[in-house]
Amino acid sequence: MTIGIIGATGYAGAELIRLLLGHPEAGNLILASGSHAGERIEDIYPALRGRLSSVLVSPAKAIAESDCVFAALPSGVSEQYAGAAVDRGISYIDLSADFRFDDDEAVYSAWYGKPYTRPELRERSVYGLPELNRLRIRELAARGPVIIGNPGCYPTGASLGCYPCLARGLAGEGPVIVDAASGITGGGRELSRSFHFPECADAMSPYKVGAHRHIPEISRNFSKMAGRPVQLVFTPHLAPMNRGILSTIYIPLGPLPQGLPSDRPPSPENAERAGEIRELYAGFYRDEPFVRVLPQGAAASTRGVRQSNYCDISVHLDQTGTTLIVVSAIDNMVKGAAGQAIQNMNIIFGFDESLGLGGIPAAF
Image (cartoon, rainbow, N blue to C red; front, side, top):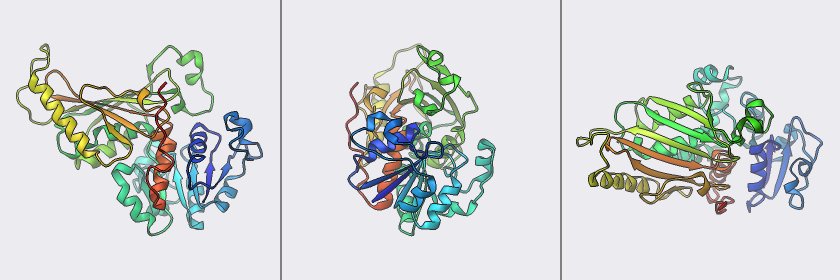
């Protein structure tokens, strides 16, 4: 099949190229760029030399000649291309925020500063977190072209970390707190002072505290998973690494035996309960190809998922036994972007979900 990539020169676009070159069903790639049309992709990314030689074309040409289109574009510009793809009868997988909120235009407009220009497209769109919406993706794809709102990177790690706890009703009252740290690639390829090497090397800092655009997406996912409103406190951090997102999540638990005083070490009962919750997580994700629940006592790390589509999860309890601490790790460019987009493509076309995504994480 022929696959188009609009926005092929950005980090997510380049990662799509890298992964699709190893996908057995991706026979031909058509690469498009609004700002680099006419240039060669191997001149922009020399690592592709000997594997791919391609002139960058216009987005319209990619849509006209492809069987499926990925779009790795800034939020706010994707609707016109999605509409053109659906009008032509092909599916469109969008890595921006433009289709993540289904028909909730008010939330999208409040956080992204623009209304929907083609609200009718939401009838063909679905939020593309496979572990949450796999059946809905298949259902829509069986009826014709589908638009995938590929999840954000922070929402992917946070949502997978919380899903079993929220779905099984373990969470009690009070906010779920998510502290997450992202690699520099999460800011995209365009230059800015915040991502300039001297500004972010040898340093770690929070940003957009209480105002990050991923807040409504994470909050919506948590409430859907729990079947009730869930309060969220989310703080992102910029970490001095190229790839990865590590999310440390604090979930207040429901009614428990009397917790220990906060200055006492964990009791044997505490460790036993942590093991029980870990087993709940393992059972919940048993059939998921890309979610790995680590053994009790291990802690998830971005090092364990680098350049892979895995999400590693570790489960812990605080010393009082009243707060569940979940750590999730993903590669923000793969499970947080391009890999998850290809996972969605595999679902749409009825391929094995792991096709093209079976690479072992880089060990270092």
